Image (cartoon, rainbow, N blue to C red; front, side, top):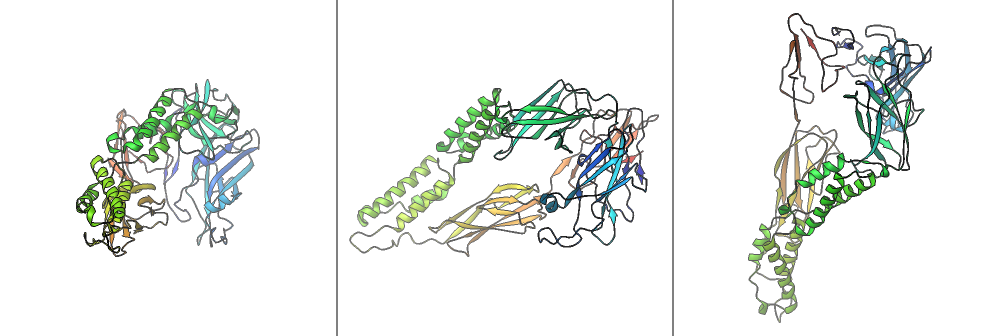
Length: 543
């Protein structure tokens, strides 16, 4: 079935292939951003399709014996959505080990003669990895006319050094252009003769575009960019030079995000020994964020605050330590040797101070507890051979885990810090393990749960085993849920209605939008927007 939205003058028409039949693999073609079309004068047009899927028919890259069928990775170009005969076919190549490892390639077409007035070019990808040759859903990409008036040059361009992430090997910047025609997008290249763009901005709104993650060289250099606007030829290649990125003005977005996170922490929850340095770094970072800082100044403030945050310690629970102070506080000096009793007294005083001040981290409290129990065991009776005190009696080893049950979303990354408390043993260390996971990248490291990229499990079990007694374990349950997203329809729709069959939806669920023009009206093609953009492939119901 073909869906062709109603067209109107000046409104872009997009055709979608929404049917399934023999020979069609229901997989998507490379995204439009992976396709670069150069509509040169004469039969000199070029097309480059990146990220072409190339599935092994047998073997694998890891084993070094992967085999790709002859027809797999062939890209076909068409003039429209329904034509059977392609105007050109090219086999994708894998120029680097990275392409082979990811199972993708690059297809290059040269010496084509496309429509001089521009338009849409349609494409799909063949796959012969199975028992028959299939092709992906046909997609399309807009390409500019050969001649005409190029998009208006920007009134200004700026390049700022970003403060997001940890940029130890590579430097990144934020590019901003103003004074553009609305609808103009900027394609950014790392070299003047580069064949494909590394970044593409969203179309300009109010004359402005901005994009982050622009790769920069530590010694300085140039970035190159073109202007693309539907209905106009591609602009000339512009060059923007820069010096050491650290001397550029800073984009303070990342620093402000870190400041906001740190500002939510309360002094009452932290140990005084670590709070002062943290507060100093936070105050300094706020001052930098108020100024027109260079990349070097902003990065120094961000790094210092990040380090202070990492070194910050939250106050621990002293309940168990308080119980030990009461239990072990009745020994008398005359019953034990001076040396052993001095060690005991020092350890007991340190424990009482920790309980009284409540200004120690969990790690510090645990070390104080271990020192106190060791001191009690080390007490020696006066004028007798060293013996182990009979009071207090040895405790049974117990272990607890906190939290015992949590619910998290399925986004990969660091999720939860678990803690385990071992009592009744001098060795308070534990062995962490995880079960129920489907991804080898889902791990528990020193109590810190990290969810793998491809984790599909709904429930995980975290286990802490006491090293002092392997029969003593504590477990926690982790529930993994797919987050829901809200579905909102613009309230500014006129001359008709748009309704959604769901108010919330999870990843993978289908949301049906019903568009009903008012009597005497019909839908303007391309006016239906999804997150601000015209959808290129989605179920659409037209009334």
